[in-house]
Length: 213
Image (cartoon, rainbow, N blue to C red; front, side):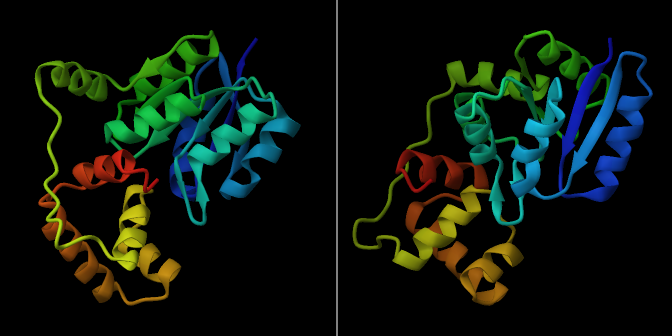
């Protein structure tokens, strides 16, 4: 019996490539595709796939919330995240929400196929690159954030930081907050200065640690 896979990603070209790859396997078949994050739950309920291959970032929709809703509805479909986000915070939130595996989009075809098979039989999967990074953190301390108490984040900066942590691009943040991309860059520069950080992963970790997301 073939593993039934549902693709959920808003990029048509990527879905086409995934469909061709998966359908080329003798023991797998793509039974449906979803390009709108708000339609994922309905598609899972109606198609009942063995594995949902889910992106985390959809315009106007959070993949983590999709996972939570599926689990709240009692759906037992195995969920494998396929995303561009390599930050540990995203991995942690996805697994806590109920995902069975987490793979980044630059993974090899072999890694993706083996991961689908593993979660389909009830296993758990973490992208090899991320797994190595997690192990290295055992010997590496958490970064310490030193926010200048006299330079607290403004309400708008907090909104921008939340959207950054959720994976929004500069253009998407600008559209969401009805401001210009230049203003977004200005807010991001101010946030980094106030928090004393530069890496996006550190901004995400700060946002999670301070319950901004």
